[in-house]
Every structure is written in C-alpha cells, then in structure tokens.
Image (cartoon, rainbow, N blue to C red; front, side, top):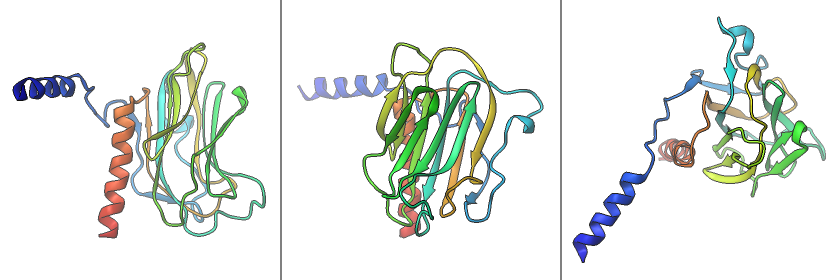
Length: 204
C-alpha cells in the first residue's frame, strides 16, 4: 500500500510542468528603480536593434512602497504600463494601497484582494495568453491569481514599457522581467516564492 502511494506521488510530480524562469526572458534590467528618482522608464521599442513583436507575454516585477503612496487624494496613482500593439495594460495603486490592473480597451479595472504595508515587497505579474473567447490571460499578486480576462488573438509590436515617470512617486520596483511567452501557474508561483525568499533573507 505504501509503495503504491509513493508511486502515485512520484507520477504526480512527474506530471508537473518544468519551471524555467529564464526561458523566453527578453528584458531583465539589473538593480532596482526608485520611483522618487528614476523617471526615464524602461527600454521601449527604440532600444532594440530589431522591432520586438509579441503575441503572448508576461510582465512581472517586485514592488515595495517606501512610505505614503503619494498625493493622489481619492484617485489611483499609475506607476507602470506596457503597450503591445493595441493592448494597453496599466498598473496603479489605490489610496488604500491596493494594486490595480487597468485595461482601457476591455474596460477592465481590477483591485488586488488586500492592501500592502509600507516596506513590504510584493510580487506582481501579468500573463497575457491571447484567446478572444476564453479568459486565459491573468493577473497575479504574491502568487495568487487576482483576475482572469480575455485578450484578442494576434501579434503586436512592443511600443512602450514604462515603470516610473508616472503619477506614483513613492516606492521601489525591482526584479523587472518581460517574457515573450505567457508563464504558466507554477512559474508565476515560483517568481513569488523567489520574492518571499529574498524578503526573508533581508529580514534575517
């Protein structure tokens, strides 16, 4: 009986997709961006020798608020955006310190489940998998899926990738990554676990 249980567990592990956080990685700038100081954003289309065409993709980063998110009053403050063809995804923080994902094309505004504390490093990922009928694209905060939504099929040029230089002026963004594929659930969870491990080591 024990041997049968061990065999089943081994078979289930074998079925899990491999996690390779380097496969498809096309942008991964070193260091971190302090939103109070850096206003130039990240590489855009003009920074590549050849135009970057993307269909599915994943944009991920870690975010830590330093103190108060900024002077936004009752309004969300945007701090990051990625534009691929006609798809324009923006990330913001609400006055309650909740992350927001906005997509004007799909009239989408989704808030994360809970607020973040000052100094707490949070893992954020947007995975775009194009299918007009199925909600295969997803938004994740700390390895927990916040929303799923459809994105129309097709390819588009990477027209903008901006972190900083927007309304939010308090915080540090690090571990920024852009993939030319939609990361699977185990990979996004692995990203969040890397963030948690880094925070644990820093605190220890």
